[in-house]
Image 1 (tube, rainbow, N blue to C red):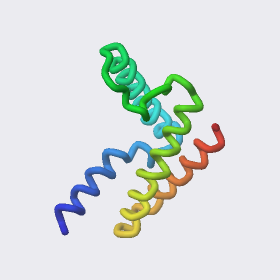
Image 2: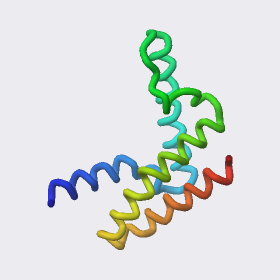
Image 3: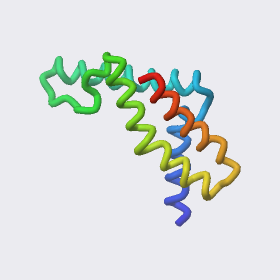
Length: 107
């Protein structure tokens, strides 16, 4: 289905920061984690239910765990399947897998 494929490609492009060089991927990831942390703080300040995955993102270990989970369960499968459809994207899927190793080493 063309529309489904288009949605997958748009979603993959939204998550493409993790396919870039380690430095660029780190910068993208830090920005998202910082945004989530601030949202969690705002929720807490407004006495709203806090989003569980956004809690404690001021802690480096929590940041690494959140990033690794996101990579492992969302980004890697998405890019692996997309690169199966478009083999010229295999190097980007490989970059994401390398990013998982990099995050694991940091933990």
